[in-house]
Image 1 (tube, rainbow, N blue to C red):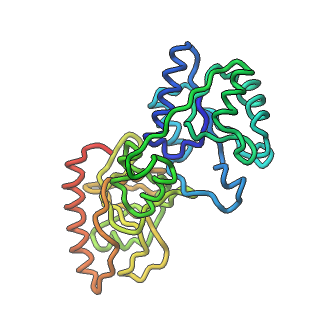
Image 2: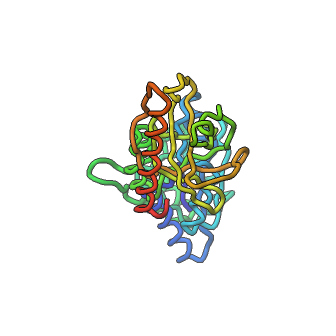
Length: 294
Protein backbone atom coordinates (compact mmCIF):
# COMPACT_ATOMS: atom_id res chain seq x y z
CA UNK A 1 0.00 0.00 0.00
CA UNK A 2 0.92 3.65 -0.29
CA UNK A 3 -0.32 6.69 1.61
CA UNK A 4 -0.89 10.31 0.63
CA UNK A 5 -3.27 12.96 -0.66
CA UNK A 6 -1.96 12.39 -4.20
CA UNK A 7 -3.71 15.50 -5.53
CA UNK A 8 -3.04 15.64 -9.25
CA UNK A 9 -1.59 12.11 -9.41
CA UNK A 10 1.41 13.71 -11.12
CA UNK A 11 4.48 11.92 -12.45
CA UNK A 12 6.12 11.84 -9.02
CA UNK A 13 3.03 10.25 -7.51
CA UNK A 14 2.90 7.80 -10.40
CA UNK A 15 6.39 6.52 -9.53
CA UNK A 16 5.37 5.83 -5.93
CA UNK A 17 2.03 4.27 -6.82
CA UNK A 18 3.56 2.18 -9.60
CA UNK A 19 6.12 0.79 -7.19
CA UNK A 20 3.37 -0.10 -4.68
CA UNK A 21 1.39 -1.89 -7.40
CA UNK A 22 4.51 -3.77 -8.48
CA UNK A 23 5.30 -4.83 -4.90
CA UNK A 24 1.71 -5.96 -4.30
CA UNK A 25 1.72 -8.14 -7.40
CA UNK A 26 5.02 -9.70 -6.37
CA UNK A 27 3.51 -10.59 -2.98
CA UNK A 28 0.18 -11.72 -4.43
CA UNK A 29 -1.81 -9.22 -2.33
CA UNK A 30 -4.09 -6.31 -3.29
CA UNK A 31 -2.54 -2.91 -3.95
CA UNK A 32 -4.13 -0.18 -1.81
CA UNK A 33 -3.93 3.61 -1.98
CA UNK A 34 -4.84 5.28 1.31
CA UNK A 35 -5.89 8.89 0.92
CA UNK A 36 -7.89 11.48 2.85
CA UNK A 37 -10.90 13.77 2.54
CA UNK A 38 -11.09 16.69 3.09
CA UNK A 39 -7.56 17.90 2.42
CA UNK A 40 -5.61 17.67 5.72
CA UNK A 41 -4.50 21.32 5.57
CA UNK A 42 -8.13 22.48 5.82
CA UNK A 43 -8.54 20.58 9.09
CA UNK A 44 -5.17 21.48 10.59
CA UNK A 45 -5.34 25.13 9.45
CA UNK A 46 -8.98 26.04 8.64
CA UNK A 47 -9.24 28.35 5.65
CA UNK A 48 -6.03 27.09 4.07
CA UNK A 49 -7.56 24.51 1.70
CA UNK A 50 -5.37 24.55 -1.43
CA UNK A 51 -6.79 24.56 -4.98
CA UNK A 52 -7.67 20.99 -5.95
CA UNK A 53 -6.12 19.44 -9.05
CA UNK A 54 -8.22 16.26 -9.10
CA UNK A 55 -11.64 15.47 -7.66
CA UNK A 56 -11.95 12.23 -5.71
CA UNK A 57 -13.88 10.70 -8.62
CA UNK A 58 -11.25 11.65 -11.20
CA UNK A 59 -8.46 10.59 -8.84
CA UNK A 60 -10.10 7.16 -8.55
CA UNK A 61 -10.17 6.87 -12.37
CA UNK A 62 -6.49 7.77 -12.62
CA UNK A 63 -5.51 5.31 -9.88
CA UNK A 64 -7.47 2.53 -11.53
CA UNK A 65 -5.59 3.26 -14.73
CA UNK A 66 -2.32 2.78 -12.83
CA UNK A 67 -3.41 -0.70 -11.73
CA UNK A 68 -4.45 0.07 -8.15
CA UNK A 69 -6.87 -2.51 -6.74
CA UNK A 70 -8.37 -0.56 -3.82
CA UNK A 71 -8.78 3.14 -3.05
CA UNK A 72 -9.39 3.76 0.64
CA UNK A 73 -10.55 7.30 1.51
CA UNK A 74 -10.33 8.11 5.22
CA UNK A 75 -12.28 11.07 6.65
CA UNK A 76 -9.65 13.49 7.90
CA UNK A 77 -11.16 14.85 11.11
CA UNK A 78 -9.68 16.93 13.95
CA UNK A 79 -9.61 13.76 16.07
CA UNK A 80 -7.78 11.85 13.34
CA UNK A 81 -5.27 14.69 12.94
CA UNK A 82 -4.28 14.28 16.60
CA UNK A 83 -3.22 10.62 16.26
CA UNK A 84 0.45 10.22 17.09
CA UNK A 85 2.65 8.49 14.49
CA UNK A 86 2.57 5.27 16.55
CA UNK A 87 -1.22 5.43 16.92
CA UNK A 88 -1.65 6.00 13.19
CA UNK A 89 0.47 3.00 12.33
CA UNK A 90 -1.17 0.70 14.88
CA UNK A 91 -4.81 1.70 14.33
CA UNK A 92 -4.82 2.28 10.56
CA UNK A 93 -2.02 0.30 8.96
CA UNK A 94 -1.91 -2.70 11.28
CA UNK A 95 -5.36 -3.23 12.85
CA UNK A 96 -7.55 -2.14 9.93
CA UNK A 97 -5.54 -2.57 6.73
CA UNK A 98 -3.13 -5.36 7.73
CA UNK A 99 -0.34 -3.84 5.65
CA UNK A 100 2.41 -6.20 4.52
CA UNK A 101 4.41 -3.55 2.66
CA UNK A 102 4.26 0.26 2.63
CA UNK A 103 5.70 2.35 -0.19
CA UNK A 104 5.95 6.13 0.27
CA UNK A 105 7.93 9.08 -1.01
CA UNK A 106 11.21 9.68 0.78
CA UNK A 107 9.84 12.95 2.25
CA UNK A 108 6.68 11.29 3.66
CA UNK A 109 5.42 12.68 6.98
CA UNK A 110 2.53 11.43 9.11
CA UNK A 111 0.88 11.65 12.52
CA UNK A 112 0.11 14.68 14.70
CA UNK A 113 2.26 17.69 13.77
CA UNK A 114 3.75 15.55 10.97
CA UNK A 115 6.10 14.09 13.56
CA UNK A 116 6.53 10.74 11.81
CA UNK A 117 9.01 10.28 8.96
CA UNK A 118 10.47 7.46 6.88
CA UNK A 119 12.86 6.42 9.64
CA UNK A 120 10.04 6.19 12.21
CA UNK A 121 7.82 4.29 9.76
CA UNK A 122 10.62 1.80 9.06
CA UNK A 123 11.05 1.22 12.79
CA UNK A 124 7.30 0.59 13.15
CA UNK A 125 7.40 -1.76 10.19
CA UNK A 126 10.15 -3.77 11.82
CA UNK A 127 8.09 -3.97 15.02
CA UNK A 128 4.79 -4.94 13.36
CA UNK A 129 6.06 -7.03 10.48
CA UNK A 130 5.62 -4.91 7.36
CA UNK A 131 8.32 -3.70 4.99
CA UNK A 132 8.85 -0.02 4.19
CA UNK A 133 10.27 1.43 0.99
CA UNK A 134 11.05 5.10 0.35
CA UNK A 135 10.90 6.21 -3.29
CA UNK A 136 13.22 9.08 -4.34
CA UNK A 137 11.50 12.30 -5.37
CA UNK A 138 11.07 12.95 -9.09
CA UNK A 139 11.60 16.20 -10.93
CA UNK A 140 13.74 18.32 -13.19
CA UNK A 141 16.64 20.71 -12.65
CA UNK A 142 14.09 23.50 -12.13
CA UNK A 143 11.85 21.90 -9.51
CA UNK A 144 10.84 18.73 -7.71
CA UNK A 145 7.47 17.42 -8.89
CA UNK A 146 4.82 18.21 -6.31
CA UNK A 147 1.15 19.15 -6.15
CA UNK A 148 2.19 22.62 -4.98
CA UNK A 149 4.40 23.06 -8.04
CA UNK A 150 1.61 21.99 -10.40
CA UNK A 151 -0.82 24.39 -8.71
CA UNK A 152 1.62 27.26 -9.24
CA UNK A 153 1.86 26.41 -12.95
CA UNK A 154 -1.92 26.25 -13.33
CA UNK A 155 -2.34 29.50 -11.40
CA UNK A 156 0.11 31.16 -13.80
CA UNK A 157 -1.73 29.80 -16.84
CA UNK A 158 1.21 27.62 -17.89
CA UNK A 159 -0.99 24.65 -18.74
CA UNK A 160 1.56 23.15 -21.15
CA UNK A 161 4.19 22.81 -18.41
CA UNK A 162 1.53 21.59 -15.97
CA UNK A 163 0.66 18.86 -18.48
CA UNK A 164 4.31 17.82 -18.68
CA UNK A 165 4.54 17.40 -14.90
CA UNK A 166 1.14 15.72 -14.61
CA UNK A 167 1.75 13.39 -17.53
CA UNK A 168 -1.57 14.52 -19.04
CA UNK A 169 -3.52 17.76 -19.44
CA UNK A 170 -4.92 19.53 -16.39
CA UNK A 171 -8.68 19.12 -16.03
CA UNK A 172 -11.33 21.24 -14.30
CA UNK A 173 -14.66 19.53 -13.57
CA UNK A 174 -18.07 20.96 -12.85
CA UNK A 175 -21.68 21.33 -13.94
CA UNK A 176 -22.83 23.30 -16.99
CA UNK A 177 -25.11 26.16 -15.90
CA UNK A 178 -26.96 28.94 -17.72
CA UNK A 179 -25.02 32.13 -18.37
CA UNK A 180 -25.98 35.43 -19.98
CA UNK A 181 -26.60 33.83 -23.40
CA UNK A 182 -24.38 36.49 -25.04
CA UNK A 183 -22.27 33.87 -26.80
CA UNK A 184 -25.33 32.55 -28.58
CA UNK A 185 -26.27 36.06 -29.68
CA UNK A 186 -22.88 36.67 -31.33
CA UNK A 187 -22.56 33.24 -32.95
CA UNK A 188 -20.37 31.52 -30.34
CA UNK A 189 -22.64 29.71 -27.85
CA UNK A 190 -20.66 28.62 -24.80
CA UNK A 191 -21.01 26.05 -22.04
CA UNK A 192 -20.75 27.99 -18.76
CA UNK A 193 -19.02 25.71 -16.23
CA UNK A 194 -19.62 25.98 -12.49
CA UNK A 195 -16.41 24.33 -11.19
CA UNK A 196 -16.39 21.95 -8.23
CA UNK A 197 -15.42 23.58 -4.90
CA UNK A 198 -11.74 24.52 -4.55
CA UNK A 199 -11.00 23.65 -8.19
CA UNK A 200 -7.60 24.75 -9.49
CA UNK A 201 -8.79 27.04 -12.28
CA UNK A 202 -6.08 28.41 -14.61
CA UNK A 203 -5.26 32.12 -14.81
CA UNK A 204 -7.58 34.39 -16.79
CA UNK A 205 -7.09 33.98 -20.51
CA UNK A 206 -8.14 32.10 -23.63
CA UNK A 207 -7.12 28.45 -23.98
CA UNK A 208 -7.29 25.62 -26.48
CA UNK A 209 -8.60 22.45 -24.91
CA UNK A 210 -11.36 19.90 -24.81
CA UNK A 211 -14.70 19.38 -23.14
CA UNK A 212 -14.85 15.89 -21.59
CA UNK A 213 -18.34 14.42 -21.75
CA UNK A 214 -18.47 10.79 -20.71
CA UNK A 215 -16.12 9.04 -23.11
CA UNK A 216 -16.10 11.95 -25.57
CA UNK A 217 -13.36 14.57 -25.90
CA UNK A 218 -14.81 17.51 -27.81
CA UNK A 219 -12.46 20.26 -29.08
CA UNK A 220 -13.14 23.60 -27.39
CA UNK A 221 -11.90 27.18 -27.12
CA UNK A 222 -12.06 28.04 -23.41
CA UNK A 223 -12.39 31.51 -21.89
CA UNK A 224 -11.61 32.27 -18.25
CA UNK A 225 -12.27 35.75 -16.93
CA UNK A 226 -14.87 38.45 -16.33
CA UNK A 227 -15.95 39.27 -19.92
CA UNK A 228 -14.43 42.79 -19.84
CA UNK A 229 -15.98 43.72 -23.21
CA UNK A 230 -19.39 43.48 -21.54
CA UNK A 231 -18.21 45.04 -18.23
CA UNK A 232 -18.60 41.73 -16.44
CA UNK A 233 -17.55 41.33 -12.82
CA UNK A 234 -18.10 37.63 -12.15
CA UNK A 235 -15.18 35.36 -13.05
CA UNK A 236 -16.41 32.63 -15.37
CA UNK A 237 -15.18 29.51 -17.11
CA UNK A 238 -16.81 29.16 -20.54
CA UNK A 239 -16.14 26.76 -23.40
CA UNK A 240 -17.11 27.15 -27.03
CA UNK A 241 -17.29 23.57 -28.29
CA UNK A 242 -16.26 23.42 -31.93
CA UNK A 243 -18.74 21.97 -34.41
CA UNK A 244 -21.20 21.06 -31.65
CA UNK A 245 -24.95 21.52 -31.74
CA UNK A 246 -26.62 20.34 -28.57
CA UNK A 247 -27.68 21.09 -25.01
CA UNK A 248 -25.21 20.55 -22.16
CA UNK A 249 -27.15 22.27 -19.36
CA UNK A 250 -27.09 20.34 -16.10
CA UNK A 251 -24.42 17.89 -17.23
CA UNK A 252 -21.26 17.23 -15.22
CA UNK A 253 -18.34 17.65 -17.61
CA UNK A 254 -14.62 18.32 -17.54
CA UNK A 255 -12.47 20.84 -19.37
CA UNK A 256 -8.89 19.87 -20.21
CA UNK A 257 -6.35 22.55 -21.11
CA UNK A 258 -3.88 22.02 -23.96
CA UNK A 259 -2.38 25.48 -24.52
CA UNK A 260 -2.82 29.12 -23.57
CA UNK A 261 -3.69 31.24 -26.61
CA UNK A 262 -3.73 34.77 -25.22
CA UNK A 263 -4.68 37.11 -22.39
CA UNK A 264 -8.28 38.19 -21.83
CA UNK A 265 -8.79 41.49 -23.69
CA UNK A 266 -11.37 44.27 -23.66
CA UNK A 267 -12.69 45.27 -27.09
CA UNK A 268 -14.31 48.63 -27.81
CA UNK A 269 -16.88 47.11 -30.16
CA UNK A 270 -18.44 43.67 -30.23
CA UNK A 271 -17.46 43.07 -33.87
CA UNK A 272 -13.79 43.18 -32.87
CA UNK A 273 -14.46 40.55 -30.22
CA UNK A 274 -16.26 38.34 -32.76
CA UNK A 275 -13.34 38.60 -35.18
CA UNK A 276 -10.86 37.70 -32.44
CA UNK A 277 -13.00 34.75 -31.33
CA UNK A 278 -12.98 33.46 -34.89
CA UNK A 279 -9.19 33.62 -34.85
CA UNK A 280 -9.09 31.85 -31.46
CA UNK A 281 -11.27 29.05 -32.79
CA UNK A 282 -9.04 28.48 -35.81
CA UNK A 283 -5.91 28.46 -33.64
CA UNK A 284 -7.63 25.98 -31.34
CA UNK A 285 -8.48 23.74 -34.27
CA UNK A 286 -4.87 23.82 -35.49
CA UNK A 287 -3.34 23.20 -32.07
CA UNK A 288 -5.62 20.29 -31.22
CA UNK A 289 -4.92 18.68 -34.60
CA UNK A 290 -1.28 18.49 -33.45
CA UNK A 291 -2.33 17.13 -30.03
CA UNK A 292 -4.93 14.46 -30.87
CA UNK A 293 -5.54 13.34 -27.26
CA UNK A 294 -5.75 15.18 -23.95
